[in-house]
Amino acid sequence: MAKTVVIIDDSAFMREFIEEILEDEGYEIVGMAEDGDTGIEMALEHEPDLITLDNVLPDMLGMDIARILKKEEEISSKIIMISALGQDDVIAECKENGVEDYIVKPFEEEDLIGKLAKMFN
Amino acid sequence: MGVFTEKELIKAKEIITIGLAEAAKSLGTFIKSETQLELGDDFSISENFQENNVSKRGEELYLLTTELKEDLKGISYLIFSKDEVKSIMESKYPNKEFGEEKYLKKAQSLILETDNIITAGVMSQLANVFNYRTYGGVPQLVIVNHNEANKIIAKGTKNSTFLLGFKAILSSKSACINADLIWSIDEAFIKGVKKITNN
Image 1 (tube, rainbow over the protein chains, first blue to last red):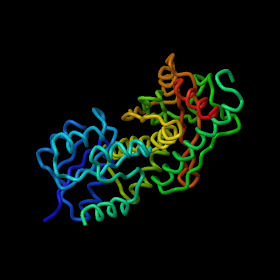
Image 2: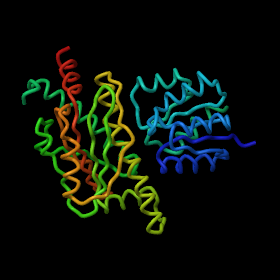
Image 3: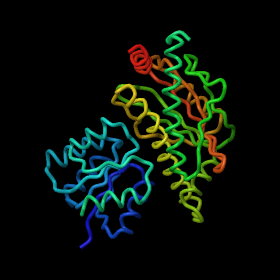
């Protein structure tokens, strides 16, 4: 059975880019959101195997979404942050909030595929 | 320069240059084309930043505005010409043809993402060097002519808390891109530079 994914990113380009990579790898995209509120709603509704999360969204930070989903709602989904922000303390804070792994943009397809293979194996 | 000693000014330029070089590297990776940073002989971190104007001419400039938030506040402008946007589109969608409406939608989305990557490249450097929590917000895009772009920049930088500014060009010869990058920043930058120079 295909692993399910919710993509949360305000960038239409990134949503499409991530969607294409994951679909080619056999993942099933069950939802895509361009803001934090909608993303949280979708994540709670589907509780997917994986959530890809941008860190800067129009209404909130991705690291706060991760905290809500993992620490407050305690969902089982694995979260991978995909963000252009690469500062050390941000990455550390994301991981404290339940983010499994972090990819700094720009990235190659293989970077994401490799991280996910490691995450799910 | 008033706010910095000579030693601090050298350090300030060094920090900005490393940040911009990171941004150029990120842009190069993103468009898969080697990209350089061009500062020019007159590169300065200036208190007269309101005189920073858009270099490129044209009736259809893609002007991206990003608000810099939290510990280091400011505003960033990134400007591409119509042809540069076309070049970036070709780098991401080689051999693909789109109808006019779809092209515009995809181009706008791609350029917003390009801004995100460039701005974050500089911000991450500043945040790491100064140990600040800072990031760029969601960018805004308008398509305007040269004069309108300068008016928007002049209005946006006219903020009493912004004390310094700089301008640079990110250039890829093979992709025919010379993107203008114009920043105005608040006193947190000055404090950060003084702290690390004098420690």
